[in-house]
Image 1 (cartoon, rainbow, N blue to C red):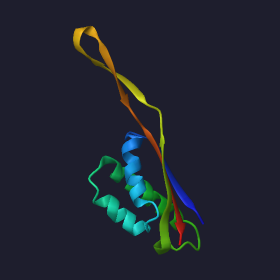
Image 2 (image 1 turned 90 degrees about the vertical axis):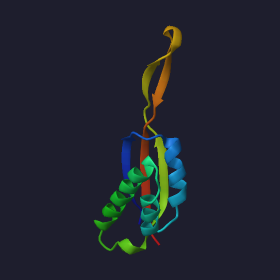
Image 3 (image 1 turned 60 degrees about the vertical axis):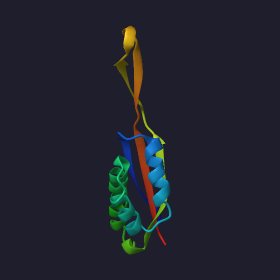
Length: 110
């Protein structure tokens, strides 16, 4: 039975987080958490928290074996973008795009 966890409006670029999502997809949960723990990227900590939330959601269901869980699907969608202005030379301005992500993690039993 699938169990999912969702984190929305996370202040990390979806492009940078998708690289981590590809690494852990299909792994057992314990291996995925260890991989994220030793990955030196900002998105790894956030993705780890969402994965732990999915495991906690699975723990609430009766008859679910926590040790047999694996990461079935990780979906990193783009959230709204914050638009900021940076002053440049000769009175011009450049737009800075601060991107956000919606992270969905689905775990299932083997």
